[in-house]
Image (cartoon, rainbow, N blue to C red):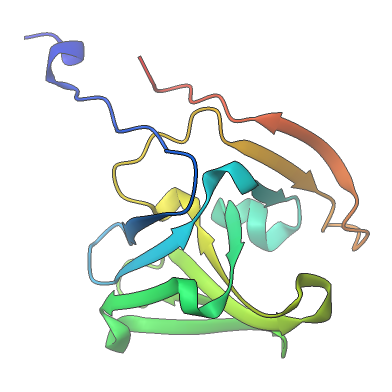
Length: 149
């Protein structure tokens, strides 16, 4: 049996507001989020985002719903206005929340790497310079999935 015959391609992202489900790698924490992939995503080069492979989207708090595993969620915060939630079992950084005027006030964020069964090929990624606290746009490019067929 060849590897390619046993791999089922992931569904592609649709355009327009849709609901997506996500989870940590061990499955202890599950969530869903409503977002429009056409609005793009962000990747930051700060050490926290780089080392945890954070690739995020921002949504209004009501667009995010924790489905299970609330008792497993742990919090990490570098600033009072920014909280990152991770699974206390497997350690995956899943989502976050905060309140920043630069983002329009209260917000939620989701690590799109934690969405279940979705091919992110083609989604726009804005690369930001968080490492130097400038938040300047370094590049904007569509994501190319190196693992898709």
